[in-house]
Image (tube, rainbow, N blue to C red):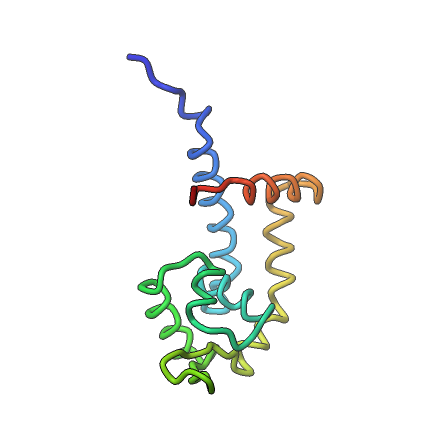
Length: 139
């Protein structure tokens, strides 16, 4: 049977690497009672607080169906609040609570530990990020 070898497949290399990195994050985020996806949302909010749910979903590349339960759990944990937009009562913005802001103190340490675990140099990591960002599957 003729088949492409698995170790030559881009999809498999990305898949296994993502699983390994997410596993490291999971271990480091567990003491803070966070999932990796919640951490991604927090990182986006630390960059720009008070953005709409649709903007947040787009930046995180998550569907609205994923965002609703995710944000609900984060709100129950006291990390965020949903607030009505003053110019559009149908839309809500997501705002960090004081507790959500304080978690940013740990973010650099967590991301640095994950980066160190990869064994990559800064240049290698920058190249991988650039190449991943170059992949446009929305064609």
